[in-house]
Image: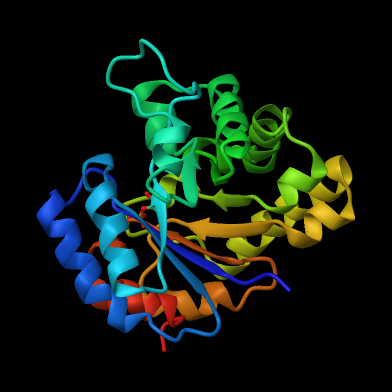
Length: 253
Ligand code: PEP
């Protein structure tokens, strides 16, 4: 049985003090959830204090990072290693977010290296995949996602993939207010699961959590989370307000 994951990607929002404040507000609102696991991914600058606070509060919130550099240590100015994240009790690491692919220029090969590094450090990658509006309109959405899966997962085995999280995030739905319909989200999440089954076996496909991300809000969470192959959500904008994010973690209830 896959436990849905509701993960908040705070992007480049929230100073350290603001991040701590948000966690203080959020923690009581998501205590005792039975149907979902909750994670927050603050900016690197807030990870240390948020990690300590989560532990002090005994909060039922996992800690995630938004990115990582795929080396243990070295002369990589400005970068953060998997071991540094692990030392802060980070459980999840986002890799391949479309903003990093499109704005920073990260390619599938680099993302595959990040997945390897995250797995080797004992954390869980959240691999983001998704198509542009142009690709969808040209009928190429599945081919785009398949290509990303093939290239980014090629260094992992079925057992590792079983424990991973894959987030289907259509680029046209991120931060735009345009959400994929529940059927569109289901179609692609189910396509991803079938692809994993074909490439890595049924056990991996049955266990891997496939999230939907793209303008998830309290009022559309329930219908998205009701879809059979949607195992949670990666939430950007709406994760910056404790009440909204908690409502999503409660599937809009
Ligand atoms: C995201 O950045 O992963 C995301 C889904 O953003 P938003 O919820 O704001 O569309």
